Length: 250
Image (cartoon, rainbow, N blue to C red; front, side):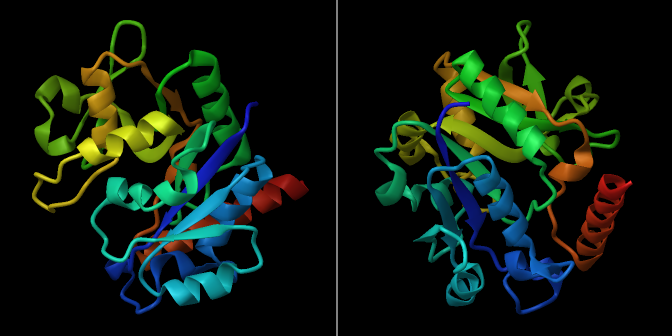
């Protein structure tokens, strides 16, 4: 496995948690959920690990200061592409690949991310997406593949045709990019959407439209790709982690 660095999206408030605490600081089994994300990046040998912080950034720093991480500040939450752009001064000239993780997806396993990295590096793709199959994928962006299995496009649920809505493979928001082309293209992402935000999947569209190779790696199960947005989902994550622990012990 070749060298790579990691950015972790950790700037949001997470209003659906119904709490003043920054979303990534909500505890799972007594630890901030973002710690699990940092742990998995470091366990894979991430050279640089950059936490993108915004809401309650001093508190996030304080609770992550035991880790060898750097910080980039996203003062206004203007979308995922805008967030990654805030790391340009730290990573813009980085020669290797860049893994993009989300601070509210704490259940990802080392083995899944290892497969993502291996697939990306073997394929020579400019970008590789982590995907998952979901029996009821309502609300998620669908992965449309071409005849060779490469990513042709990501279609948001609201824009999907009837045949596209039948697709079970979804985008889970975890990516591996060639770093230099990523920073060269982030400025081309537009915010002409309802939220007025700059989204990272739009970089994938730029690449595909240009004929660049984008591939996808399917996670073995959807559970580990779950994002945490509510207290109920937090409890579910605790259950999954505790079950994993019991299986390991047995």
